[in-house]
Image (cartoon, rainbow, N blue to C red; front, side, top):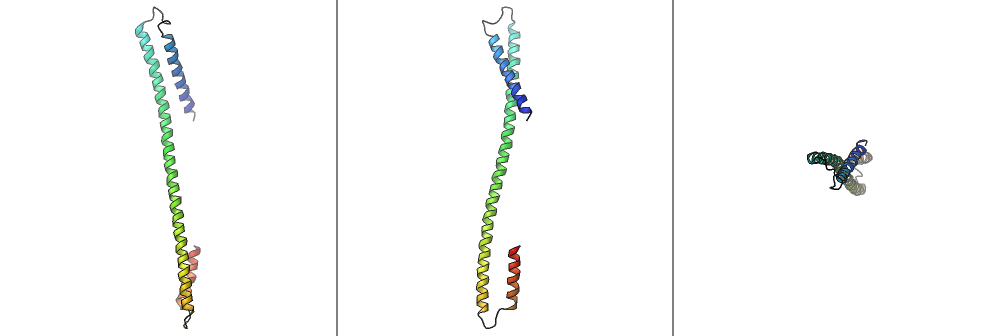
Length: 134
């Protein structure tokens, strides 16, 4: 986080240097003995510093944008997984309800017969209740 103010300060300084140079380089403010090649070199150096500071600021913000985009993708994936999990939980609940209905139907049909409940049915219903708890 300490890099951001440093970049901002460099950008502001380069911008103010450009403004100062333009104000000093105006035809009314130039001295008669100013060398045009020296003035041109000074302008190029100043604007190159400003351009470099602008590039650094742009890179900083692009990096932050990339981080935020990746974070947004992760959030969307998490939301998708949560909704899929919720959907599957509903399917499990419906299947459990159907299983209970079928078990009660099987128990009532076996309980109404003259032979009574088969020995395997009692074991399977207790193991099913144990599995439901898990």
